[in-house]
Length: 189
Length: 189
DNA sequence: CAAGGCATGTAAATCGTTACATGATTTA
DNA sequence: TAAATCATGTAACGATTTACATGCCTTG
Image 1: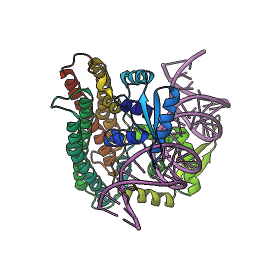
Image 2 (image 1 turned 180 degrees about the vertical axis):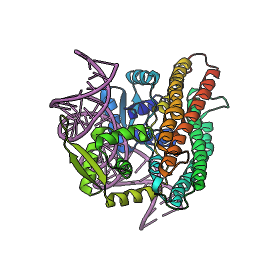
Image 3 (image 1 turned 90 degrees about the vertical axis):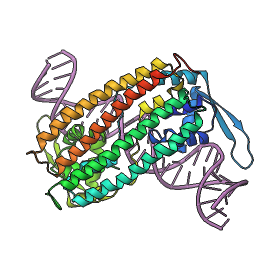
Image 4 (image 1 turned 90 degrees about the horizontal axis):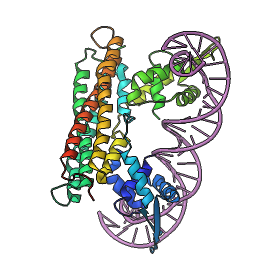
């Protein structure tokens, strides 16, 4: 499982609580690896039992104790082993939009086009976020203009997200043109 | 759930068995929606109970009865409703390669580069498949040179796969260059 | 005063994969 | 003779989501 390594990955920099982890996850890896708190908490418990992380409870008034987790040497070893292990497969995806389009051959032209236009909006907004917000966040964590390791890698995955969005917008525009060009004015069957 | 509609989507063209469905799925939607037989069989049973499909058992010698499923009018309605319903969200993905890279900031340069080169090979092979095999398959089902609805939509999703692979190859090449350019000759911490 | 952030979790349900079980026929 | 194809499924496990449960403090 990869959520495990995702948590170790964040904890390699500094100790954090489950709640903190959810937040940093939402701000960075969320577009290619997301998780809910209800999955994070049990996973942290499991990692602690395995000896990859340790926790310290800090009492608070009015709130439950804050449980701060830190990575152990064993945790670092397992993280490193996982990171270095090559991924020699195509990442599997599940894409509802592609699935719907694939089966839309018997739909009316305008039904297909509204689906395409809806995604076009979504993807244009996403692209903007990669180019503005995410870019800004990365610049704010990379101290000077020269990027150190972690910031460079964040920037590299951000560029993937951006390129993916650019590609998808272009593909949606071209697909819209393809569908509109087809002879069938209405339904075809 | 979407596997449900995936099965209905295929059955809208002609009746099929679970085994057949697995095969057509592997040949077409597999790159954006895959499933195992152990998930397909129970799902077909559920769809039949729901009244979306009906089955007919054809006895065979030496093998279990062949259970051929056909779509019902209700099934067609539900499929159409799902297809027409707009997807106003970014499709969620889980990408191990991005996850590993994101956390590889403290790895040695050559460790990161071998990961990138491994994926580069994988993605180049994938690209070739989209450009050759898949393209060929689509041409073989679209009778003449003019594409009818279903073949056009298949071609449109194929183009997504191709564009995605092209984009990923370019991104991997550029990332490789970025990482190699960094000052740190070995480890940075 | 309602909504959201802080902070922890559990329970139930769903979705998906891997392993198991059977057994004939065909291909390498 | 071993592996693959045909053809059905079940069982167990693992991963993920949604709903529930508590309770204070801050912001709009």
